[in-house]
Image (tube, rainbow, N blue to C red; front, top):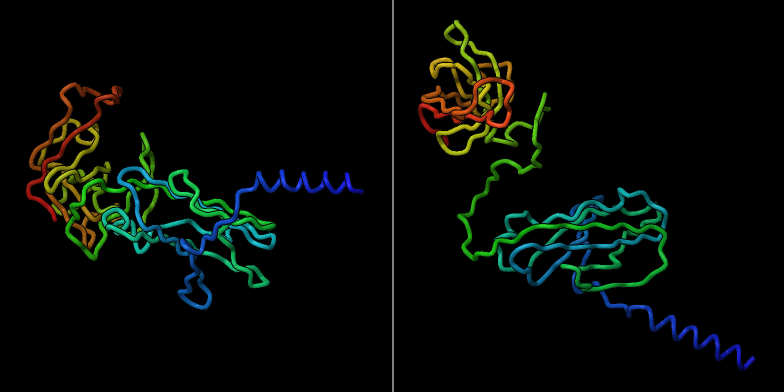
Length: 266
């Protein structure tokens, strides 16, 4: 019996030596209720380093829940504040209670691969989330604005057919119309992107062998079939500049053109 007790104590000591001691996440985390139905977890970090940053979270819950119990980690109140403020920095994540009113619990928080806190518990469901961003390395803050112009998305090498998007989400997108013989009609041909107040970049084949007087640019256009859509801006083409090596539709490497508008847009 004495030998067995020594073996058990030795095994427990070995196991405890391999377990990271608990450190409370309450220094970084709290629950926030927007309404009676909405619960958020709020992460607060005192400082962030310039350049690339990554936050990793592990949530646990004492029940078998699906993955929707924990949302995506987002900067609060918005990304602009995170990128330009001097701290402290807040992030929020939507949480869903179980049927027994148990909230997901933050069991691990790491910042740039450095563990900030960890708590051990025997839970059934685990959820991992992360958020990556690059913080501005300059302390020069841009002029504040209550409006947000557009939403950045992913880059794809080719867009064929496209899809609908909410009105105003991508205000730099441009619609290139070819004017018809009728004085107030035109047909949509291509998309473009506003790169300055007076210049749109597009594909050379969209204006291939076209005259400036036959090309019109639509900005803020949502219905591509409506040439005169209310609320959209229209500009005539003042100059068309295609890549000098573009000759036909079968050489896509140089299929690029600049369209100079007759007057700038805001």
